[in-house]
Image (cartoon, rainbow, N blue to C red; front, side, top):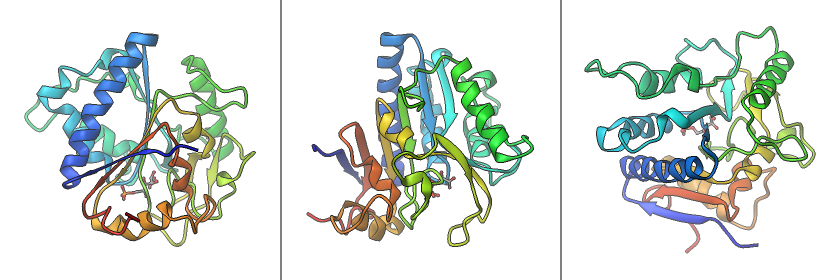
Length: 256
Ligand code: 6PG
């Protein structure tokens, strides 16, 4: 099976800049082909720099914002206004007016957060899957949404989305999405809502963003042959449709 593309850049800012440029390319191609760009973004701290890079005037003018719809691969089961929610970072960096009062190029209706006001996880999950159908996002025969581009981060334990090592969401035949109990080994210790790995492998394109020395050990494990997807779920993105954007610090321990 052919492998993913791996780019090693200088640092986290270069990773954010490269990711932003490649998102604009993917968005332009999707809009040309299908009239719309469905982007599924990731959580964690890494996307903030990417959102800022996308908002820089030289890029913001090239991004087809009006045809862009933004979804989330996972979120913490907390209110949108909670700083620990993944949508909070997007709101702060991309949707709210900038520090110098410039309005966001993105319409609030183009952002689709997980419905964390729902009474429970099954209700939130079925509502979100219903919203995807309502938005006419294409789906696989097995029910996975086919996003134009999925962004994932990589946790220090090898997780992506909120699919942690040993998770049933890492297994073949897993449900499309589900509630995830609060992890005890990874911050924040909050319950989650997450797609399973089939969403990553069903996407037209995947960008894995993993800059920083803190990722070097886990990336070495992910790229080694001695681990499985169950051990390190982010391995599911070692696929030909994926581009891994690393920096010299995070790539330092990769097999040559
Ligand atoms: C989450 C994320 C998670 C994240 C990784 C990397 O909700 O926490 O979706 O999968 O991408 O934990 O996080 P950092 O970018 O903060 O290193």
